[in-house]
Length: 110
Image (cartoon, rainbow, N blue to C red; front, side, top):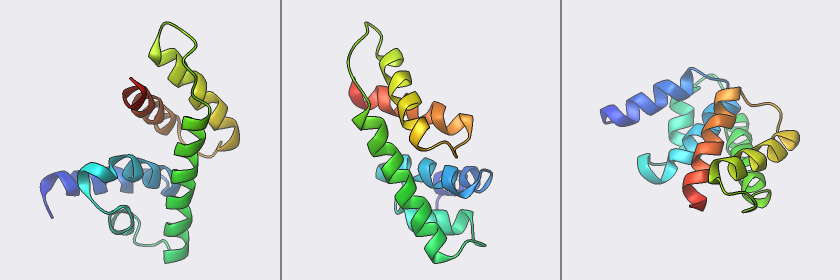
């Protein structure tokens, strides 16, 4: 495992399972398989809990996209608005996870 992958796993291990799953879900295209990385970050979690956390991450991302609209002159404001709406459906995440989601959404929608 490379140093980048080890760093991402370490970051995911430092937060609750759902937050780690979302972080790894958003990084999946760059760093590899979400399940294996999340399992390395949270070895105490059962396979069912890991899979449920990944599903929650994917569903949260879908909610963010579903709630996004280009309505202001600032993409960041539109992303923040979408995240706030998705947050009502998924209130369990840490603040830094919502910030990551907003950043990733703004980048994806530019």
